[in-house]
Image (cartoon, rainbow, N blue to C red):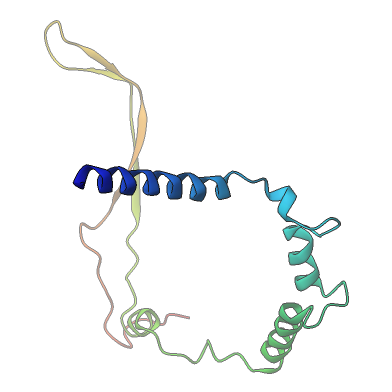
Amino acid sequence: MITHYKRLIVSLTSVLALMSLAGCSSMMSSRMPKGSISMAQTYNEAINGTGGMVGSGTLKAVRSQVKNLKRRSPDYSAYTRTQENDINSQFPQLPNPSVVMYVYPHEAGGGVNLTPVPGYSTVFPLYQHVYYAMPGEIDTQ
């Protein structure tokens, strides 16, 4: 009796699984109506405002309104305090000249393990540390 129920449950489960997989095997072209437009065409119509759809071109209209508002509003970025321009205006860096040194081609290592090293240039700052001026010590302009 229990084996009969087990067989019934297994067969019902397999039938349901086959039916659910059969729904996934249909072609999308058979589901879409004839003469429908593609996703790219729908997107272009919505962005560019073509096609006479209700609400078409709303993104383009909003972008143009934002652009007009930006043109009308004054630019206060020069007056805005940031951490960077506070530090740079109060404590400017003192000039630190650099010395350029050329190292000629040579061999490195010792004994039989000599390795050729090509010539190269390197830059050394004159001072080891970066120094800052006190407020009002030098004119930054």
